[in-house]
Amino acid sequence: MPQLFEQLFENNKKWVADTLKKDPEFFKDLAKGQTPPILWIGCSDSRVPANDITGMKPGQVFVHRNIANMVVHTDMSMLSVLDYAVNVLNVTHVIVCGHYGCGGVITAMGSQQVGIIDNWLRHIKDVYRIHQKELEAIADMKERENRFVELNVIEQVFDLSKTSIVQNAWRNKRKLFVHGLVYDINNGYLKDLDVTIENGDELPKYYLLDQSFINK
Image 1 (cartoon, helix red, strand yellow):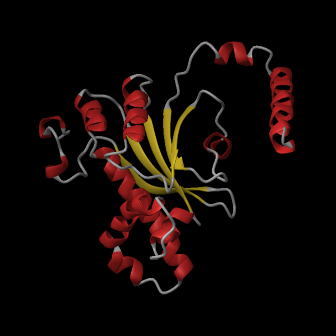
Image 2: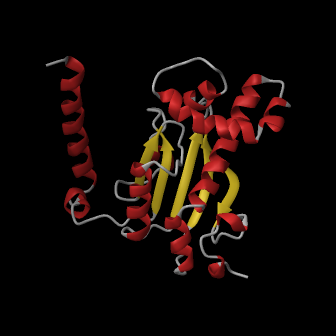
């Protein structure tokens, strides 16, 4: 058996032992079920573990991850996670978290073929097209990349708000907040992009499935 694979089990045993020292009832309590208040939609990048960077315990964050933290309306995996989180787990906060230096976002800025992921990157390129004027006015490429990361998160927040899942929750008077954050791998801090949607008021009317539920 490869050494790295064996090391996973050794790490696991140590983690269990350390956890039980701190809280002998930890796993018994965890096995009773989950009631996380947060759904986290993040990037698959191995450097951005949701629980670790937020200081949250197991059971507090329901997580979906894909390349470049995208909300694609034909992605049944994402939609299934969103539906389960909102309608079964009753989360109150949905967070889209991107990160600076995101390989998917940076690759989407170019034209090099990578593989099947090229089809996924098309969705990120659409974000670039929408914000092309702002982005190409930024001369420094690193700053342009960082801004593209931020704009991509903002667009995914709005895309979440366009789903029937989120809109039906609002129509049923559910408290559900959709937020956009960016994680800076260089220093470990989260940045609030100050984009929070809680009832659909910020969406154009043509995206609304039922305009009567909007708070006036």
